Amino acid sequence: MYTVYAIYNRRRQKIYIGQTEDLATRLKLHQEKAFENSFTSKFEGVWELIYSEPAGERKSALVREKLLKSYRGRQFLKQYIPV
Image (tube, rainbow, N blue to C red; front, side, top):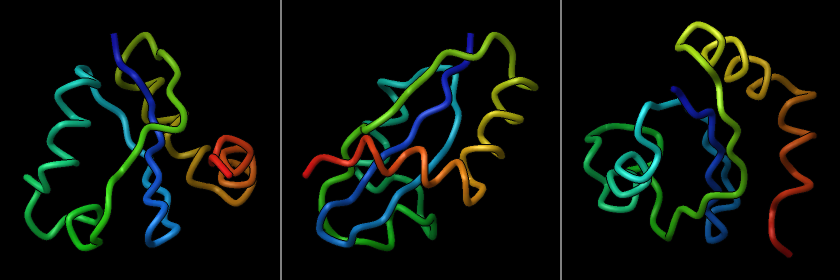
């Protein structure tokens, strides 16, 4: 079972969208900046989970991730950014 997720960095006002089999571990890796030269490791501040949804298999997770990375997908995610 895969999860499509979006995390937000309030300090830099950036959104990151990804997919994973283990959401808790992936969020921990983002916070620890364990992915060298990755998008999330480039920015200071805390990344907080703002959205997640289950996806049965990796193929469907990748399709949904791509949709959320589109203009309309990002507009959809903006409603979940805490004020």
